[in-house]
Length: 222
Image (tube, rainbow, N blue to C red):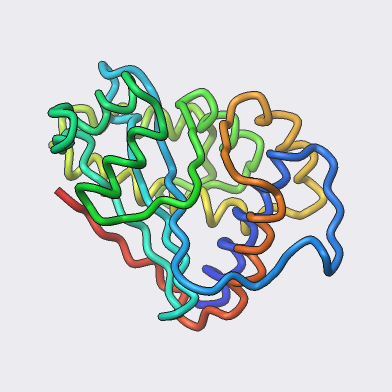
């Protein structure tokens, strides 16, 4: 289990670094060890009428305590600074205001973010081709239909399922042959938004090699 999670973490970090730069070459000057806690915010950004596709999930890489955590932030939590829900704040003011609010209300410092709408999610799943749902291979449409089927569940149940989908997507990247990465880049590059450099992503991947506990702890914050 530890090795599998290590592999999927390194794969997703390298994949997103590839998405941010179509030309990729790796040598000893392309990365460095990063000490401390690093938080990557995964933003599921879609219409308010489709909350089952929307999420704020923090991927925490902690090189001090040697662990990995997925933390789901409740979309309808109110920002104490703006008197809006987190998702309304995001729609109205963008990533920077959202990150400031998360720091103020949850005491989580976000280092970087990745924005994935439902079109991007489907494209990534179809491009990877190694994502599973109920132990069966799943297409992008299968994943979107599955999330859509949760529309009548309460929001906390939806967010738990969303974390499971994200974790399965990470596993999908770990199953993907590296030779297929250029295809994934070509298919998804126009759909994913990032604010992180290839050097930073690769440094996080290099730092993750030091981790001993790769169990992805899942946490939901109200």
